[in-house]
Length: 218
Image 1 (cartoon, rainbow, N blue to C red):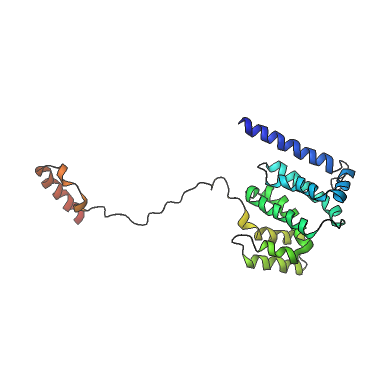
Image 2 (cartoon, helix red, strand yellow):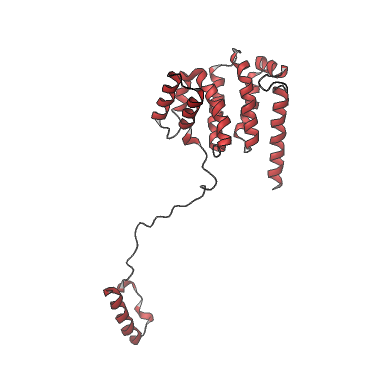
């Protein structure tokens, strides 16, 4: 219990630190001068610091990290150092987070939003990453691409993206460890040969045989 509260306190402090250092209080979508400087000089370190908490066992920290990364996207798009490799690392970190936080809609929504934002920047390249999702439905990927080509509303496109990522979603706690028992076969309920007749006396055997026959004929 002490470890749990200590961990929650540390992750909360870190998420608040990210928000205070990287995002201005006046405008949630305007990076601070510190963030702008790190984007130009230490972009990889910045992205690791923002994307790592996505896989921590703290939903609030994950949500704040998504919010911070979303606010940095306009500045990142203008930066040439935001290479395809770094974008792919961010997208993979988001997909991994689905397997940890993909249980509740309030966790799925911010991950879907930032994940789709990064995916659509270079969809022709990142489509290969989506095809590597275990048990992914190829038809759902085609439907998502078709909705993007048709110019559908972004909310609908994000919904299609969510369906593609569905196999990654964490199983609800109520379903974890749940056993499904299936009885494939049962031995005969009445089997005289399987009975241990030795424990009965001869008198009891005679009486038991009568009852046994009556049960079999009923």
